[in-house]
Image 1 (cartoon, rainbow, N blue to C red):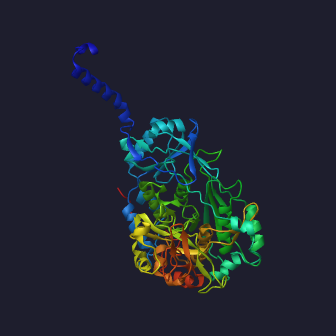
Image 2: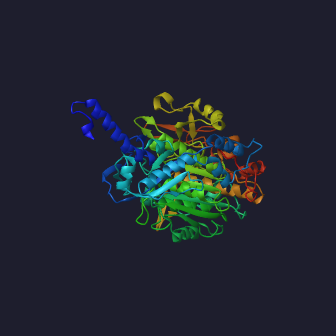
Image 3: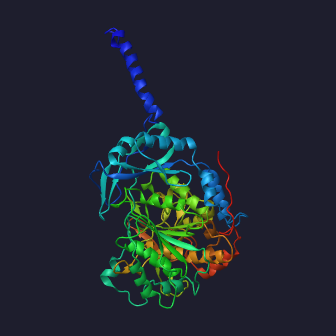
Length: 587
């Protein structure tokens, strides 16, 4: 009691205050709420076309995802390189999904810290992946703000999309912060680039067979009469932020362009929380293109809205990764095409590193991930080139763009040229991997390549794109005809369809799928169509196409006939139906 201290004894009152504070903190510490410490700092500048629209409603529901730190990441990387390098005796000996989860399982103490923290706030945690490296809970904004020591705001995009984000950054208790890579949705604002249809709609100058139709693309990339034969082959496209799917639009596309050829293999299987609604130009472009290239290959459409009336708001890109991680080896597609992209720096580096780990987990299972490189040329900001992600990740295959040349659609040296809209460059996050160093070094010495000092790009960083494909003059049905669509959103599913057919050759022969493609691509660059004219352009410069690898078109566009000889000659690996390899358990 205060009577124990004389009124003039300041030291005594201070000591008692500290004792009372310590007593008050005991239950808080027991609940794992010591701290808090900053996990991600405030967003300094909003991305283009986003603006704050006011505070979030207190009762608005969020699905918070806690990315619990993983173990075994160094071994994961080394294993991925072994099973993906054509010269390795372990090429194609992919891990099972169970083996991947054993390898990367979080420290049980970290998992307990996160789940105890959620329960202390009256929430019920749910493990969103087999090993618990993603934990989610549905939380009202009011509770989320208290948990994360932050404030949520409504943030609107010029396209009409509205999300809720913690733009001031967020903090967590010390033990919880030590247990996670990041929490979402918080500081990250999603990329919302869309393919352009304005030119074709305005002028409608393309008629008859002058589009990059399935038949023309099959001719250009020397697919010939190749179609899928392997029963266990699957391909997929992803869609985010209310980019819906409509079977009627896909069937209209097939009816118009697939006379005399087989497009797809029945209607796609639908996976995810957003596979209906209004068909989007980007999402329908993806599924129409990949099925148009790869006939008789089973296809899937994976859609995640991020925001919908029926579900709490979430980070849709993470929902895809969680679904991928939770899908069995027997059911998972062997290749994904994704047209999602944004500035590399839109993800805080710790979060971007976690995304890399998720890409590696897919690759080591034998799953190929292709991403559109972007549609803003060298992506000029303040007179400097800025890289795009996730295409800048070393662990995905980035697909740049080309346009028809004078001999299109007939294959040959003059069939394609680099397109101005295609993005490329050098990562500011990730070092350049060994498999591309020689090819990139030759490019940087050629005449016409911009100066790194003038344009601020990092010549020691991972270079992209890896490959390219046609990126203009596509015809899309998305509820109604959309002629003349352009963007690397066209290129990624085009290339993915070719690689799905290459996977089919291996699977039909009892070999492993191709999995992570990049080491093979650079090892066998001669099997691609080298694009040596054109450039990708922006307001502050260009990446010219040159002989060999270049930052406009990568090593070139896929030549199915040449690549077919390459892939069947690669080591057999472990066939998909074989017993899975076991990974080392990290303790």
